[in-house]
Length: 391
Image (cartoon, rainbow, N blue to C red; front, top):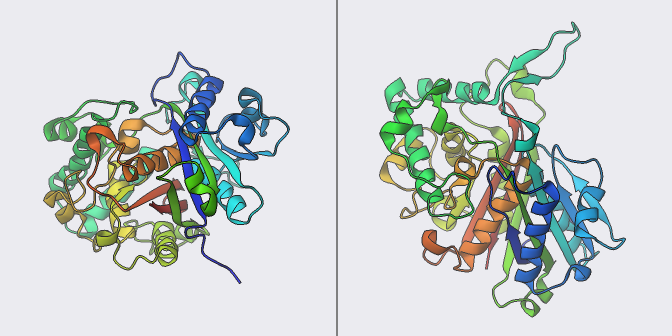
């Protein structure tokens, strides 16, 4: 009979590089930096690791991408990829292996080196066709449709809608300015966010996450072993992944104001973790704010607020560091950028540090449960991974 993973797996060590334009580091340098911070944090040596799951979207083809720089000695090393949820996918696979009792100590690690490739995020070719033509689309353009439809459905004028998403950018930049590992470490004003150059209306420069390099890693062990490594391990309470069938692309009634996969992954995660009131019970969240409108819609899909009410919650400061449910306490993708294989583990790194009281200037008061959320793909076809962790 299927069982929940709740409290079967603990994280006892984590590492994370500084994210940004890491011209001075190779991909291998970042892997080593993240892995060895995790080893030191867990109090183990590399030889203690029994298996590795590594996540990357654009780099390498096999587990050797990880085994060679990390000098793992003939142990299983598996490369995984699941679009923007790739970092979470590495953690998910590693967690299931430990929960199954196959391994006692494993490493989950994710990395991406995008800046050297010249990748800018624009343009992109989507899918193929029987006629030999290709649809040219961009991520900002696709998510901008989420914004314009949301404004229309809930009666927001262009000015009020733009103000709503701009407040998200201001919040996240404030948090990122407190984080020495963030790519962008400066605050912005609401006026700057609202008047920034437009990328795809209503999304301006400050509504879009950047292109960055980075790596992050986690050491996972069985629950009964956890306190042998440290007094404050972090336990996985739930994990869920939802991959949609793409039916939104075939339905003219798709509302373009929600992402069904996020909602469904949340339902599964909440059930496993015993969450009945997410806004009250979740202490903090790191969600996939590839664009500011994405964060706004996620707040509703994860039931942090009712449908159509996110503007009211944003205006009240509910999701700030001082609010009832801080979202993006580390600055989010907005300030870290999105080195795809690393982002999911970077999110968990923030939850891990916050739960242990080690988040420095952005430390929250007595957090109990942290949620991370990755969105892979674009609406209406997405892959969603959601984790809940706590002490």
